[in-house]
Image 1 (cartoon, rainbow, N blue to C red):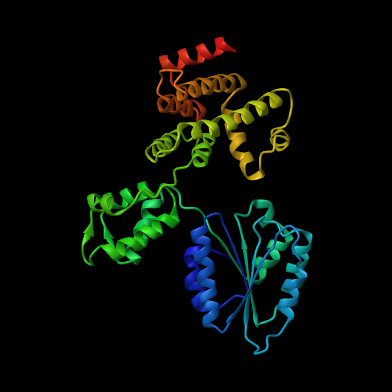
Image 2 (spheres, rainbow, N blue to C red; image 1 turned 135 degrees about the vertical axis):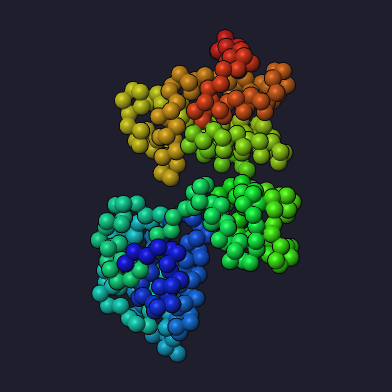
Length: 353
C-alpha cells in the first residue's frame, strides 16, 4: 500500500504493518520516517533490532536465518535492511518472495532504499513488498515548497516567525533540510517564547548553512543553474577558497565533456561514451544535460579560457581571477555574456595554441 510520508504518523497510530518500505534521496526525511516506524514498533513490543546493509556480496540467507530464529526471551524484533544500490538483485528478490510468503508476527521488516525509478516500482519484488505492507516514497522539498516546509517546522517547535524571516532562513539553508532543522532547534533555545522573529533577527541568529564547495559548484553548472552557480562561486570566494582549486574542478569537468562531445559527434552513444570515460552512473545524467547545451566548439573555447584564468591566477595576466571564473561559469551553465575582456582572453589564448 502506497502511503504519503505526511500520513505515516496517523497510519502508525492505527496499527503496524508487517513490512515497511521507505525510499527517497532526502536523508533527513528518510531518517524521520524510519524513526517514526521504529518508535511505533518499540511501543508495540519490538524491542530487538537487527540491521543489515545489502552490498554487492551480501549474503541474503543471514537475514532469512535471523527472521526464522527465536530470541532467548522471545522478544519481537525489527529486521532493518538497507539497500544503497536500490537493486536487490536476483537473490534479494527471492528473499522478499520467500519472506512475504511466511511472515512471522514477531518480525517487522523495514527496507530502506534510495529513490526508486519506475522500473523498480514495476518489478515483482517491489509489488510483493507493497502488497504485504506500506510503502513510503519520500520526495525532496522544492525551492518553492521550502518556505512552507520551514514554517510548519517552526510552528511545531513553538517558534513564531513572519514571512520575511522564513524567507531569510530558506535562502540561508539553500535546500539543506538537515541544516534547516538544526537552525530551528537553535532558534528554540535562543528566542524567548511568545515573540515573533523578524527578518533582521533571523539574519543575526541563523548562520549561513549553504554548503559551498567546488563539487556543488560543478553540479550546479552542469545542471544549467547559472544563478545558483554564481551564488556558490561567491560563497567559495568569501570562505577563502583558492581560485586554483575552483579552476582545477572546472577544467577536469571540461576535459571530460570535450572528449565525450567529440566522441558523440563521431557517432557514439552518450551512455556508452560517458561510461568509457569513467563517469559514475549517478553523475551521467548531469553530464548528458550539459552535453545537450554545450557544443564541441564551445567546450574548446572554454578550455582556452581556463588556460587564461590559470595565467591570471599565476600573476601572468592582469585580469582578476574571480571575475574571469564568474564569466566562465556563466558560459558553462548556459549563458554566454559578451564581455570584452573575455573575448580578448579567448582570442589571445587561441593565438598561443
